Length: 514
Image (tube, rainbow, N blue to C red; front, top):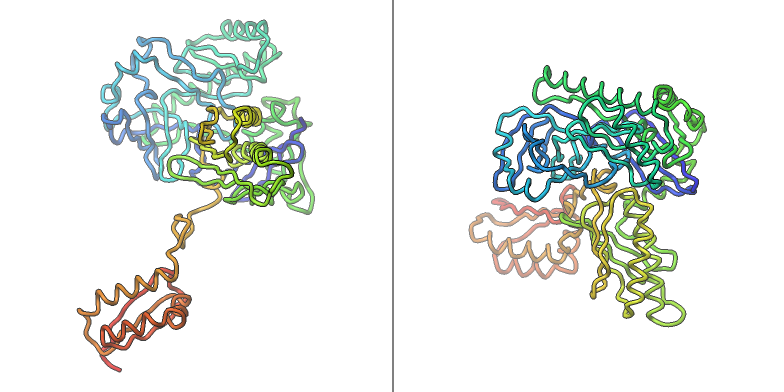
């Protein structure tokens, strides 16, 4: 599969698009804010311990306190506990990801550990961001540090040796494991990444030395730095694209910034000189994302409704707890029978859903409401098609078979904000509700408010300030409301349209002189 990385660099923002056969499938954005800090290591200070939640808040110097669970805290004698298991055999190598390994404790360990016994308020603590802040939620941090390199991931708080599941030949897995074991001088853990397949011992040794020295440097900084402070910052998004995606995912990287281009070449000189020919500086007059027709697909990925080629469509709704995706036949009426029409729409929707989940980087719980099909064999076709379509996704997913109600429940690993959260903000008009009170309802609300307040108001008349659209309605179709009010409160009501008013906003004033 022919893949390219297109990098657009401006003064305040860098965008990296992963293309498969000319179509954008993943988009990563880095801005000069705290939106993507996954992988950063901080010296923090415990703000508050919550025994009831077995968690704590940690001040790492950002606007929002970070959150740490008991399972993510290493106690001083953590090696006395049972073997720490690794959830995934290789760290997610998404460039938005951290390189932080997932550690899970056995039931015995979990039951015997209490957050209040491991950390105390005011304590200084070294943590790594496992998940960037998402919406109103602060970042999630862990004390299980991981430092990703090109070929290895160093885990200084574990002694586990893991090999990427993508390396399938058993003899090669054994070879790599034996090399790491023979090179290891400290009781550190390592994960051997996919790109290490076939790599000689010398390259692994050099990277191991580099990662170990980096860890020692972080340790020294921790001893002298105040709390809170940043100890180690992950690579820029462009360099993460090179480290994690070039060759492993893409054959070519095209960047429109000369300084960025030179920075990448310098990075490759140090770590991967053989890849320098894979990097190209874009010097066209047209913006690079326009040259590859990417802006339209990005805009489409922000819409609530996505049309299918057949005339059907899907609707993607983000809620606080989950993402709901609804499939509809729309304009598609089919050619033969209803079951066939529904099945075809659902199967077409499967491809678009898998594509949109990956492009929008939707994580957490996802509920997909397919159009009901009667045959169990057709339900299985939809489920298997979705599983197959999601195989291209590098984020870990878990899918349950279709329920009797036509729902498929799935989860997808979430590291950072989805694209819609990163590029959009709640509507200032409806405050993210998605709905406004109808104009007629607003008129009736005004009617009730005036009836409620009029007895306490003196004056000879009342002034009502409203949005111009509400003023038109009150002076037109709903003028009977004003006529009725004037008779009931025995005061003249004068309406003043104010274009600065929100549709639902209105003010009532008493006037004492004509």
